[in-house]
Amino acid sequence: MTDAQANTNEEFAIQLINMNKWYGDFHVLKDINLNVKEGERIVICGPSGSGKSTVIRCINHLEEHQKGQILVHGEEITGDVKQLERLRTDVGMCFQHFNLFPHLSILDNLTLAPIWVKKVPKAEAEATAMKYLERVKIPDQALKFPGQLSGGQQQRVAIARSLCMDPKIMLFDEPTSALDPEMISEVLDVMIELANEGGMTMLCVTHEMGFAKKVADRVIFMDAGQIIEENIPEEFFNNPQSERTQLFLSQIIDH
Amino acid sequence: MFVTDKILPELPAPQNTKGIVHWLKVNLFSGPVNTILTLFGLFLLYKIVPPAVQWVITDATWVAETRDTCRGEGKGACWAYIINRFDQVMYGFYPADERWRPNVAGIFLVLLAIPLFIEKTPKKAWLAGFILVIYPIIAYFLIRGGSFGLVPVDTNKWGGLMLTLIISFAGIVTALPLGVILALGRRSTMPIVKSFSIIFIEFWRGVPLITVLFMASVMLPLFLPEGTDFDKLARAMIGITLFQAAYIAEVVRGGLQAIPKGQYEAASAMGLSYWKSMALVILPQALTLVIPGLVNTFIALFKDTTLVLIIGLFDVLAVVEKVLSADAAWLGFHTEGLVFSAFVFWIFCFAMSRYSMSLERKLDTGHKR
Ligand SMILES: Nc1ncnc2c1ncn2[C@@H]1O[C@H](COP(=O)(O)OP(=O)(O)OP(=O)(O)O)[C@@H](O)[C@H]1O
Ligand SMILES: [Mg+2]
Image (tube, rainbow over all chains, first blue to last red; front, top):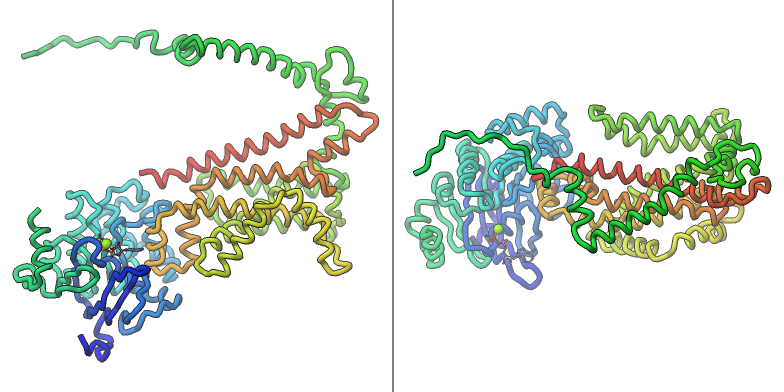
């Protein structure tokens, strides 16, 4: 994508331009180029250690990239503290291990950022929180603590917690891979609903290929720190171009 | 094939699995070694406890005009020695007419603190904040006087249990936040902040408190400009606070290290600034984790206040040890003085320990899986 530089305009929610990252001497991400349109839903997959999480985490600057550019809504991320705080209110993130705050009730988990970052009045924040808890189908758990919930419930709370900030972009880093099989679908259902509503840009690292087929606009395959292949789901699954993609797909479908 | 229509009756548990005899058998007389140890223990208790109780309570003298009443065949402890001069034990040389002021301050503190222990009190955080920040200022003006028409009472007149409590309370209230800041500083990514915190902590941890107190009272005035009269108590308190802050910093750092990275990441991914994520997410968890270590430090601080004796401040131990025992009419009751002070310190330390245990239990519910 040689003309990426010229394309820096607001229609893209996220742009990664020749992004490179190293952990010490280890070159984790190599020349990552990716344009994500407003409202687009993207699934990233690839073998373990290929750098999927790192890409996602660079976008909201939990990790720092060393070369290239990252633009969110046309604004380049510089690492400036004030800019980051503003940016992160627009970019929600869900983690593999939920990362709920164990010392706060579910309701307090959900209202923390709206109250302290967006300065929303408490009553209003609680009303919003209940609205999202209802959407993820666990309003009855509002007063419990995270430790009292099942993994699937915790992840749904984590999704609701991100939604409470009313983000324009959602990043998911393997939201279902720490869950027992019977809980995966309850979380995926919530995510599919969210995706089908439209309007929100979603970047999701996952190995749930059913989810990818159902909702993704594009699937991206990464290996060894590179984007190997990128296509619409139908083509990606039925007609993978690269050998590595074929191998990967055969492996995850076989077992 | 097996079928039954007999309903079995409920039977009482076999005798030897319950009851005191069984407990004794299992716990105290389960073998020859255990039996010997038990008998030896009983023998020691028999030798120590009855005489101690006799000396402390049954044979003790509680009321006495002169020391002769306390002396004689079969007499135990002379508590009259302490009771007769109880005011001094409590207040040191604080003028008798003004003692209502520390009393008011103390009662005020207790009244403020009671709601903290009641489950349903609203806005507990604000109340705690008031106790920790505003109350000490009010109490200082009340006890120190010199304004609002109150007679000034110099801090070198402060003494007794009052002084012990003042130093400890002020020490805990200031050393805790300072220690937290130092712990955060030591984990900072900013090299200057980090090295400053490390140097500070390692310096204060490396010197004995006695030297700190001596330096505060003897050397510090040398560095201050001529004529600045810097209160001796204030100097001692600054020394104790900085010293304890270094210990608290290391305790808190242990807690910070135990918080998973995901918590930091989740907090910052939500747009919380560094200070907000520390105050709202990380520290509440980290401090809860290290309550035992913190209380340990507080207890040490409380007992270390006795060292102010060496720079001429009279805390409760110093009053008993130096003032009461110097009274020529009441010579020879050293033991009573020491036992009494030990008891006073034990009461407070035990209370702190119990409170920390209940606090731990209460805060734990949120974490249980
Ligand atoms: N903090 C770190 N320091 C050094 N190396 C790291 C660090 N974090 C990740 N790596 C390495 O970077 C590479 C990419 O890691 P990343 O977590 O992005 O992989 P991933 O594709 O998300 O894998 P997985 O599917 O297992 O989650 C891995 O080889 C990993 O060992
Ligand atoms: Mg990963």
